[in-house]
Length: 301
Length: 229
Image (cartoon, rainbow over all chains, first blue to last red; front, side, top):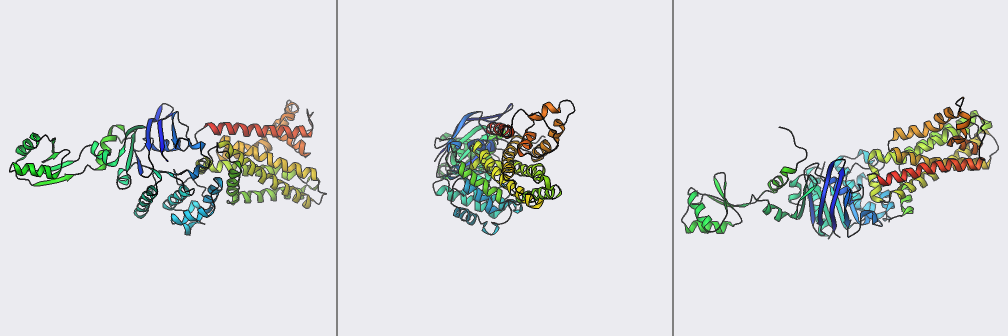
């Protein structure tokens, strides 16, 4: 099932929290939803889920709005704020009422508790759970209806390193089962190893919707880094071969090339190399350069 | 449209029975009601009417405001996106729970008072409990905050109406239009209201209260459907 956003817009007073967002989230892959804090990620997810009413535009799941789904939890599982539970109700009873609301068999309650590792805390009151355990309960609730589409808003918040690793591998597993997995984060590093595709927004507007690899190459910063005592001659030789060469501190950066090509050109011209290596653009760098002018809240100074 | 009311009712039933506070509240309401019956045996159900049912209304209010306080209302609307179905399910469950509790309290009150059990009054108290619960769900959904909504459902019957209904100059004119004064007329329970020149009979009085409760509930349905959760 695909998730489609079509010119989705939400205005709060004079602020355009989400501004004409159009993109498609495919099944079978993990799609990272990136943007600085305040970029409109949570508002977008709340509109997809029918909690906030779009000012204009639409969000649909296989062509249908969330409120048109007969048993929504069996189609879309979501984790927004893990603290949205009654503190005096046990974890298991919280899942029991959710199951009853969508006619999900009660055995699923114990299955998802087992899957998220909360079986031993099933009877503890939700208010006594640590943030990490609350997060696991929220993920259990998302998985309850065995849904083909999953939305997670900042799922690793408050998790310890082991928990973060667990969430990442869970996302990959869920996508591997053919589900649509849409995960928001303000930290690119969280997404780097997990996501296949990225939807990047800033100030409510779409900045990029593409594969992680495309996002990297488009945002630049990558290339072959080469350092030579005969830098001027090397630059001339490379430029003569039609390559784009830029300065990178005390070295040269050759765009869209390979170490083999650069090395062979240097050898033909008898130039000495002190360094020759492929430099990947860091995802962080690409993210910062793409969202730089769209940060809503920035510290003064 | 996922207008699956039975499933939503089942969910609300699980919610109500998996917290301790509603049961404690009913216990408090029962002690107050039956205690008053022991003091006032001639007017056995007075305690249920003036103390028991208002406490039950608080339970009904909290089924809504308790969810707004914790943010759980968003989870509820994710499970059942049709918000009027959510409010109807809450009204059904709170109405049955409070109506049944009121009936049990009324029976207990007659037993403690050692008065012959009056079936018509017991049934009327049940209807009062159920319709007051619907009113409580409506007030809770409109106001969203526990403190404000609880104040409304306690002050309205226990303070505001007795004051308005006893105003020296206008009380006799206003009284017949006060919802709880009408309900006490239907219950045939003497409370702080003087004898009014009624415009309708006891059944009309019940209908009047029901219309007010339905009006508040209907307003809540409209407002909740429009606003962001």
